[in-house]
Image (cartoon, rainbow, N blue to C red; front, side, top):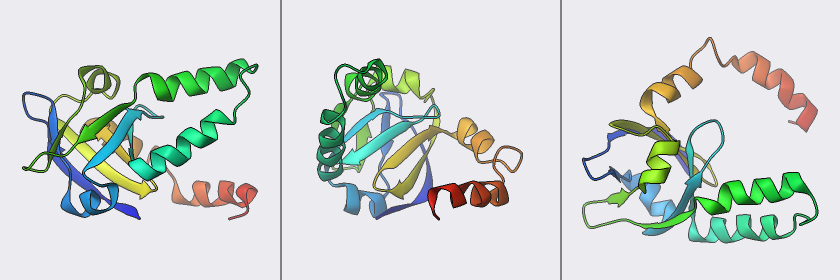
Length: 143
């Protein structure tokens, strides 16, 4: 399971270090794509295959479904971790995620999210997220 929060800097070429604990679970080759909330999503090969299978079941006749599939698949790329534990983030994905210098990698179960450090701090702030409100809203999902 992918868990934890790790801060790292991007180098001049747009490479980011994959934390060792995350690397064990995500593998040496993985997929990154545009994510929701302004971050990037990263999936192990196996999880990406599962995600693709779900996308294939969406109806081609539904515009929202087509938009959803395009959003995730158009920016997806396979990444490989080098001997120094780094991986290259394509320029279009760095631009989408506003990744310039400082980044945060978080594990969220079946995927990782890669955030601009300042965006993550804002998103994760007490003013933005209330654990009590989230817990109340989760009752609608049966949690």
